[in-house]
Image (cartoon, rainbow, N blue to C red; front, top):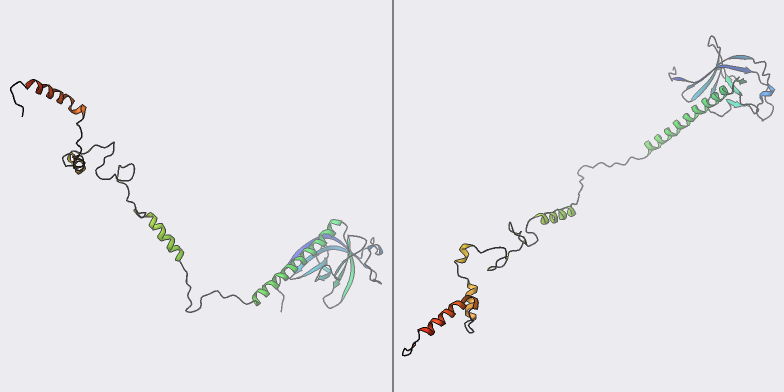
Length: 260
């Protein structure tokens, strides 16, 4: 079955040198000073590609693009790519011919910027691989967890109590109705808002013409109460009349006449 997974290009460097390295006798790291740096075994172009989670370091001919060797990298840092201990421009990679055979070779860059880009390209790829793996684990845990069913079952109902809202609406309606406080609204044109008792008039009002023709029961009550002690007429109202009347009576009485 053919693999149709898309292969992306992570980094391309136009010049890289390949060195034969001596076998490592101890567990200490590789040293580039032990290589014949002035006599590289091969020189060409380097390309880093990614297919799924695996990165590939490919050594190609500058002119024809023919593949010289490639090193599959499944993790970084790891045994497939290892930096030397005495320089930042040289690395040891494990190449694979695709038939199960592999070998370790040394590569080096003429510029330190190229070696920095090589290192960062591999780091970014495997950082992305780690993030994808964590997301896949989270999705698997969420799918395995039981889902909470919040839907209504058949025949299931829900009851909502609105008692407090009804009380508030009734109180608001009572306040908005006229006369709810026990007092009638004042008549139009009144100032105080309370009607005066019957039989009294405001200082600024005059009695209507029809009201003056009706008997005032208050005056009759006052007249009956004052019959035991008659009041003297006001001097201002009767003074001139009594003076004139008394003078006329005195002049009209003559001797020989009997007064009745």
